Length: 273
Image (spheres, rainbow, N blue to C red):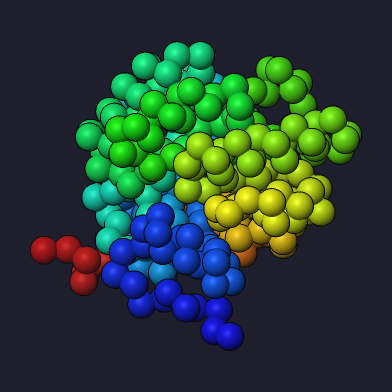
């Protein structure tokens, strides 16, 4: 069986993702926060681009995802959407824009869709955010869930360690995934949970599961782009595979440029008017 059943589709939709899941094609997903990067990811044939609230970390330098605002997420999402033709673009609802208030959740989601042109939104949590999910879906906005390690709840967890090692938490995550499925989410991200638990969840729901540190028994994988190409170096969890070391190459290019400027080697005769 080909691993690229849907390589030639003009536009990836939530329906295409469901078909990929049902027919066994793995879903490839990465983050992007700007036009230039998103353009390259889309040209490469990526299935899904997540405009993640991880922009707070890799773009703004915050220690957590909590500080990023809805306006900032819309700015990043708009930049990405302008670059993308094929990939499905999903945008994280940032902390404080959907928890505990389903009307605010709907207003936040509507703003993202109207002002950025994105295809869907993503939020963290299970049963506790089901009312917000229902209200967003009632407006025809696709919703992806997020379970396991939930970065917006880092102050509650107190650690970025693997989640659901204990039976009680594992049972809750399975239940929450099934709730997200029943309420109409088109998919769910499973972050930093044991691989066998991710398999159990994947087998117990009808929607695609996207893993990050959740093993191979899921419908697809997601990584933070800046981590996987080595732009960021300080973050090295077990699940991260670095496909390149761009930080080394960028530093080398810049130091060469500095040297050329100092030696008056740049610009040369061919680089002037």
